[in-house]
Image (cartoon, rainbow, N blue to C red):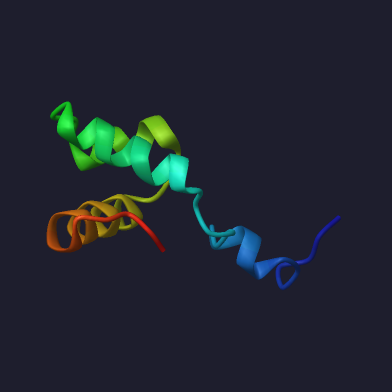
Length: 65
């Protein structure tokens, strides 16, 4: 049994960096007119992450980390 203080990063949803493939998938969904909310649900990543990926891609033309 885990206590409340165990694995706080896991409970808060913090995880490792997304792959380039997942970044590309976000952009592909965006280009197919999927909403940020839809992309978030489909790929199981936060809306803020989806938004940040799309914003970076629009401004810099890349999804590289």
